[in-house]
Length: 339
Image (cartoon, rainbow, N blue to C red):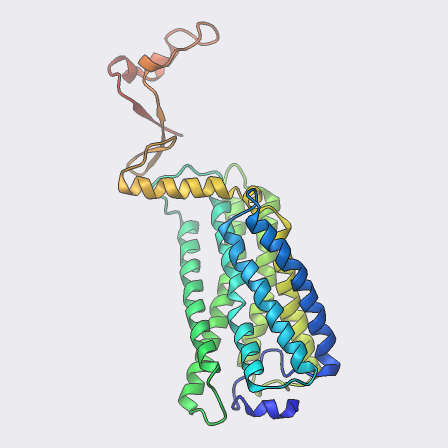
């Protein structure tokens, strides 16, 4: 019986999504299973297609698979197949799966901010630093979530109070970090839009802010659930409505948004990866390519005058040597600082 499952977790640990029962959860679980079953093959197609394949899609694809399993488990329980193993598996998937949607957001923001930049090893603008801190914070949240999930698998009514407190603290910290990261992701996206000249594509910025807002709603719901005292009624209709509307629906919409675009084209990911590779090589001093550096100054290489021929018409005599007199003195490549 569903009421027997309340004894699996000791008092103080809120249950995400409550305990599934037929009248409240069977139809909803089947619907979400079907939705994710439709999302998954599209995500796989995006991954295997050479034009849209990118690293940022790996986690949304894995998330879609995880949610298919999650809602199948909820449907089985709602239909009367209750067991401790299924119940714990569902709670672990609900806890750990969410971060799989947050990481691609930061990846896309990073490429979005690189659009109008010339790569150089001294890149360290404030927004870039905040972006790296958010990535680090999300890694910490992932570790906390994995640890809390592994401990949930062995929790019981006889678990010590200190162990329960540790699990709660890890879940709370995971939810707090996720909420901070998703809110600041929107702030960074808007700040980059206001700062960059020429301006970044506004549609891409709106896309990122929309994903940030949806994930913030889900993060806030999870934090409220973990911190609410007493714990919400696990079979109450309000508990189920909050779970589906504030957690499940935003996650579905975000999943659809990730696969609805060719992210390589929308965020110029191939170009961004070339810039990332160039920066790494510049730091090692091995870079040779279209971008070059002089210390921390952004620059581009201009060939020497001995190797370049200029048209006799359309280019005023001596203009080039007047602007770059060093070409009259040396035949080696020189560097021109971009303004």
